[in-house]
Structures are given as structure tokens and as C-alpha cells.
Length: 198
Image: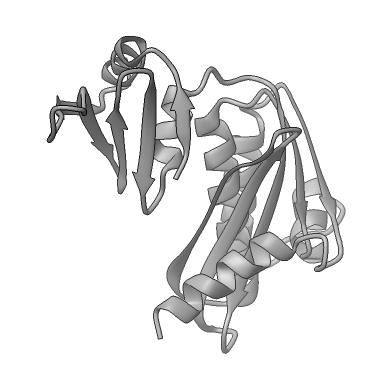
């Protein structure tokens, strides 16, 4: 549950500018509450606490943005095709800034990997990072995005185009392949999302 030390009035104005619905607090201690896409922000005197299924939907708006992050992604498919899920993690010098995992329906493993990459890039963009170093354990996806390998499957080609569009939002980016053990947190989040549905 992220806690953001800030002026609640400035935070409220930032959320309002982003079109987020804001309501009065539920208790005498809550100054206001805001909700967006499964994330809930609750303001107190000198901080805002964000909770819910995808807190980055609000922490991204509340943060000052900028800076550099390492972005880890992983997709999982049980059956190939079969039930799929994505996991992703944003890491800065301060540690894990945001992470998430969710089921995405019936997909192949490569479709799950692309979905995870797309969701991780959306999160990094929402969080306002200027520079990102993206890492995943799918050599196929990494080499397709870098243009070293062709994407013959039409659906994967479309997903690669979406990835490249998202990458253009950053001042600087890189993407590289890492061993699974380096990508363990994203892998765990994807598999936990699959396990939670059983």
C-alpha cells in the first residue's frame, strides 16, 4: 500500500486536473477519497495512502514524475495456449516503486509476454519516468522489439507496434534479455495471478 507524503490540497488538485473523481472522506480523519480503475486514494493531514488492485493508476498521477527506472516484465501461459497472466515491476534506486500482476484470459506464451511488456510500459509512462531500462527473460520478445528478429505472427506484429509506440514516450530507453532468476519478481507476480484464480 503506497504512502505518498504530500500536501493533500496539491494532491487533490493534481487528481482533479487528471479527471479523477474525488469525494469527501468517510471519517473525521479522512480529508478526501479518490478512485480510478481499481485504485483508491485516501488523504490525511500530510499524506495520501493508495490502495486497491492497481495502485499505480493513482500513484502515477500523484508522483512528481521524471527520473529513471528499471522495468521488469514477464508473461505466463499454462497450456500455450491456455490461461495467461502478466507480471511487471518498476524499480528505482529507492527500490520497488510499483508492481502488478493480473490474469489476461486464454493466450499463448508469446502473447502473454507482449501483454506483460505493454502493461509494464504503460505503468512506467503513467508514473512519469523519463528514462527506462526494460528487462525480460523472453529472448524472442526482446529481439523482435529491437528489430533483430522478425515477428511473423500478425498479432505479435501488432503488439510490437504498440510496444514501439509506448517506448517513443520516453526520452531514453533500452530493452535487454536477462536470465529468469534476474526477472524473478515479475515471474512470481504473473504466476501468483494465475494461482489466485484457481
